[in-house]
Length: 406
Image 1: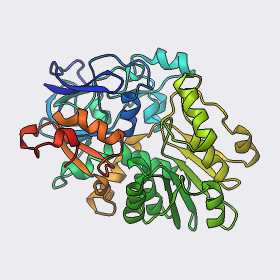
Image 2 (image 1 turned 120 degrees about the horizontal axis):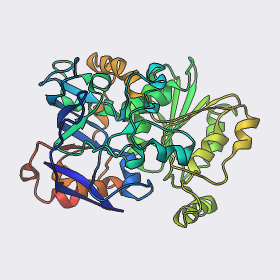
Image 3 (image 1 turned 90 degrees about the vertical axis):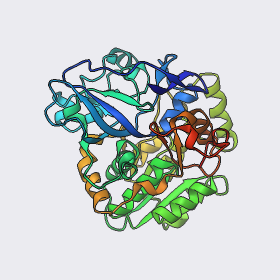
Image 4 (image 1 turned 60 degrees about the vertical axis):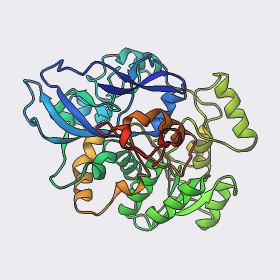
């Protein structure tokens, strides 16, 4: 089969690889209908996540049709159309039973790597390095999905794949980010990052009752989409002092909740931005914390910080004193997709929310290398890219591979 494979920093290729096989009786094989490039994939692409190996298959956002089932699978059958959550969960450990699905104790065969680095383990993730299990990802024609009876969610009849492909990761991630804010009527929620997860967080915050949503970014196209799709007020952090602007917009108090949808590759300004970039380049810190510092400074006393942008290790100049002095509550972590999927599928089916409205690029799988470059460099007004493994590149517009857009 064809699959998008990692070969090193800024080097992904579409290779011919072996078809996946049933390994355990709880497995299914999914024929991938649509898959996405995620902002988290860029952390792999940029070389910031360790334990990647040449030839690893990328991708953790995918939907498709079951074409083979293991002997122990009870809930699903050949022909079922399914959503595949990006975290892999066993369903029987303490964490799964308490709906902390992404922290599963049993799904990561390489848990010792995370235990050594972080003090404990997280669950497996499709296509996201060997410290998260070394599972083959979904940017491919076919994928082996373990613990199928636990993880998969059926797609209701009549709903096209494009309407639900973002429910594999970024919609549940954005929804959890907003849910963690415990939003009350009249609340103001500020979101750092108007990329796909940030947009989903803004859309979700509105749905959960926020009176005001404020999006913070530096790219005009993303700020415009936040305004048009999420009814957000917007701030360009290269043009204003964000903390001061937010104070002025909230009567001097600050937002009730602040969401970090940026993570370890935040782009800072001034001396602080230069400081983080140099230290990360020299590997003196793992992550750039510009956004995290801003939202900690901006949040009102007694407010909530909700962190869904990916962080990989250690950061410098973390404002723990501000968190303590202001009495802030901090929520962080990978999304517990399984917890939210049934509700989000219902919202999409009833047309209450439309996550597919942020998709800007639709490409065949062969054009993934160019698409990664387009997404990384924010070219061609790119917000979200969907790849179709079943579509031939011969049907695409001439020159599209170089442009990475349709």
